[in-house]
Length: 319
Image (cartoon, rainbow, N blue to C red):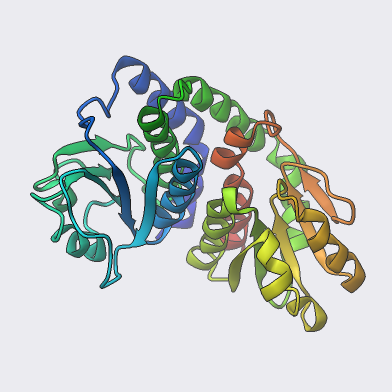
């Protein structure tokens, strides 16, 4: 992994998103999905699973039987002709995902979502959907994570016939992403300093955006090798609040949960440090806002860039 190229990968996000929007306008990559589908099973690891879990939650809310499984799990939904299996692997070679696919090939309808057409995950797939994220020369899944989320939202629109305009969403997301990149001289150094504590970084998000917290924590671990962990906002009061008692607790909080104030009440009482991203929260030490951050779908696709850029800043800092 190369930090300078990782930063370049982040800077290329707006152009990549615009390219994906144009591709979706030109062609529906999901037109080959049969109408008989009764259940959707997402398989993946790491960032792929983070994105899939949010997608599965949204499908269930729309009345679709959907689940995101650890590809490494021994147990899982059995194969069937009316099951759509979405195997997600940016590199196309995730061992666990390939192993999990073995029980579904030829027995379920398999869709391979990958940034590497022709890779092992596409072998025997009934449909291959390219992420179109371009080469991530830094070696870190950042654009592929964003494109995975975008394409899973498009899949949700297809399966629920919601009429959602994914290309338009991606163009707004490109604008939001460009806004954060262009104004980073204003917010990045203060944000990096605020989060730079002796006991790691914590990330908090509502269930509907939990992928943002998980991906953000992963970026701190994967790049600058900082201790970091993610938590769902409501669950935070049951599992992570205890850390504010003994640690120099520093967190990114992505607003949008009905339990934001519950978490912030404890944070204010304990004098902990929170950076709000995409909204203002009473008691937060600072907030990073960006264009279109009042649109929950734009926020879902954009907000991890704040942590990604802070991670790049720390990773590139002289040791």
